[in-house]
Length: 104
Image 1 (cartoon, rainbow, N blue to C red):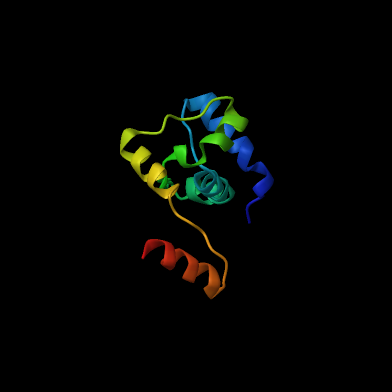
Image 2 (tube, rainbow, N blue to C red; image 1 turned 90 degrees about the horizontal axis):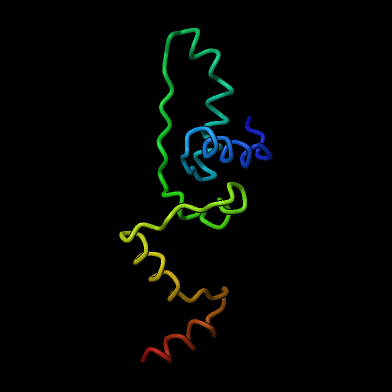
């Protein structure tokens, strides 16, 4: 079990000690790995953590934790800008009908 209250500490630690930004999911995986680390070391094994999301996805959160945020790569900037044009609607057909009417 992982103590989610420690996630910001792990994010901060990675940035301070290694100069690396990690996202919340990676920090959670790191905490989980640390829980089983004694068993892994005893068996002379290794743990490899792979970060699946670019940390810029959580740029504002990382800015609060680390005092700095990662740069958004040009290859991802387009995706973030594109997502700003997405309209979220509730679970009712009236809102959907209004959007369809606007697009028609």
